[in-house]
Length: 199
Length: 178
Image 1 (cartoon, rainbow over the protein chains, first blue to last red):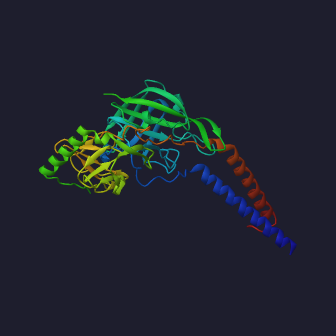
Image 2: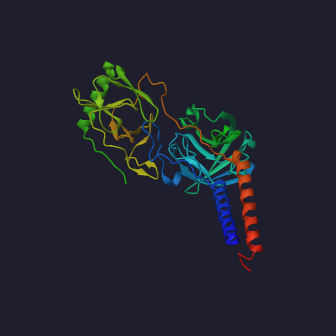
């Protein structure tokens, strides 16, 4: 009887440990982004684009990045949405498409929850003058040149120069950077790459 | 699917005339009330206008509608948000991107705000002068989780070890397999 109880306890421990292991592995390797708003909030500038001009892939040869592009809006907390995995990037769909006049914004993950590299793990290594290519749905390949980079605080709300209007066809890339803040579960900074369409 | 609203020449002319007269008298600029939209845009509404549908305001005395985000007036009631396709608005034909989230049709001289379905012949001037944040923009995305790696790796290692030990005990006593 005692042996049966002992084995039963061991089996329960094995099952619970296996469950915790599986759950932790899943949460570490897959992204569960905050839910997005179903429509842009009133007052938010929205640029309409035809499906054929929307981005399909992003390439940064100097970083060996070649990623599929997801489309995101705004999370309920007010931040730009993020890709649902660590290998794709995400285009801000309420802004202009890459190649159109204005600031097209694409973000990507720095890393996942077991520190495996995300698509933009080495984005901070990009240099002014580096090439970025975006191929849209219709197959047109657009060429951008990096014009500069910038590090900003995670809670910087002055984002009009990123998401606001511009008279140039810009492409802006964003990822996390800095030190981890456990209390808010975010990195301290955001690394931003500014680039402009090559005519 | 697209929506398109037809305007007669007389209606457009009337709207233009009212818009011009409003601008000329400066009545649009005489803001009396200040509000903040759910999107975080501060705007003001001219005197005499009361809440109407789709975030717009209506002046029953003048019969004019007011779109506080674009700062435009119109004699036509807003028709509601444009249909969404893959999360972006579907525009009526002939409209090109303009300012303050509006779209302009050069052949009709009309502006269109897809958020409220507001058509106007007066040029958008944006939220009125009291706005401290002229345009709302999203905040920066959270695109990293690596700071939790130490905790997660510790959990993975310990639970794997516990499970493996348990399986070993059960296997040794031939509870599992043969």
